[in-house]
Amino acid sequence: MKADMNIEERSAFVLTTAKALFVNGQSTEQTAVAAGRLADALGLRTRLLVRWSELALLGDGANRALVRLEGAEPTGIEMDRVASAMRVIDKLAAGHLKPEEARAEIETVSHARPAPTWLFALAAAAGAAAMSVIFGVDHFAAVSLIAGSAGMGALLRRGVAHLSENVFLQPLCAALLAGVVGALAVRYQLSSSLQLVALCPCMILMPGAHLLNGGLDLIRSRIHLGAARILFALLVVVAIATGLMCGLGLLGANVTVEPARAGVAFWQDVITAGIAIASYSIFFSTPLRMLPWPVAVGALAHALRWCVIAGLGFGPIGGAFVACLTAGVILTPVARRLRIPFAAIGYASVVPMTPGVYLFRMASGLAQMTSGVGAPAALVDATLSDGVVAAAVVLAMCIGLLTPKLVLDGLIERATRRPAIAARTQGTGATSHTIPSANS
Image 1 (cartoon, helix red, strand yellow):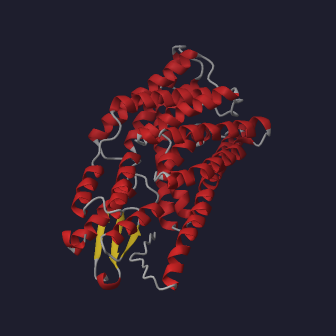
Image 2 (cartoon, helix red, strand yellow):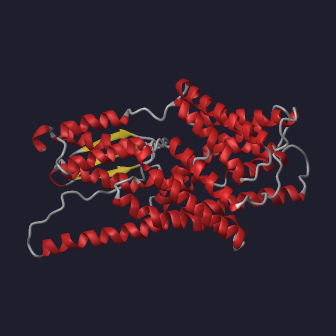
């Protein structure tokens, strides 16, 4: 393998592959491990350093002078690219591909097209409609408006993407459209469910995967990178809320700051959750062969969430924790056994639980506070309550989903290291050429 490429070409190959994983939604830890396996297969001793806007490959041992930098901003979620890149690394490590062939495949993977526009729009419409059912929509007309608004918003996002690379402009424009449609629906008495008609198309824009990736980095003590990921996600939420408030404000409407409505029937919650999860999987460009896992496990998690909230009265925070804990326990070994990126199936299965409705109601409450002198105490209380609940739900989701992954990954890695340590102790010559590292 070493004869095919010189050290500069091999290091560039490793860095290109790491970038393909990092910018498309793979977790930092898995990106570092995959880069380490690839470097080991190419006979390199390297360390991968990861920051928000760049990757650095540092030489180790005889290659200590090697330093390469690559710009990389992890703003995308394209699980098809991640899965394909991981598959290429597996083939190369197993000797089924030559380095030159693997490098060509990685170049192709890095520029793979996302889901077709028509499928993207259909998934957005179905996902928003499913979310509206989960939140207790009353009328078919409201569901139709929500689906139409979300579908048009998806088409608008793809159109804006061709005109500008600004990552905040797409969700802002889609949310602006959702706000206008919601306000028009009430003005012309097409629907009385302003809150759901306006909010549900915005909830599918929520950057849940970035929040979870940021939480995983923070748990692993990558403070700078984790904080940067979460800040990026919060800025996306701000862009969505700004677009929504502007769209509503153009026609003089506001989202009512009121307590969440009672949940729907068990069977409705589970079925519509499955539809929403399938939609999110399409947003993430998850390969169709992986789709059954997040849908099945996500539906089970939502079923447990419904039971915890409706049966035990734990509220949305306890429900989110139990659901995400279940998803993490099931999907962590599945992802390892089937060689599926955990991000591809784990995030999609729980992202519909992201508390977008609380965040948007909080934004509406803050906007109403600034519109006059002396905000009512009830408005202040409701706004603060929504903000606290939203933050607590996100924290519960991160802890519930990521704790099983950290624990199970640690146990599995410890178990797989024991034979290698025993072999070295007995003098069998087993060695490890690369120790991957990912620092923020």
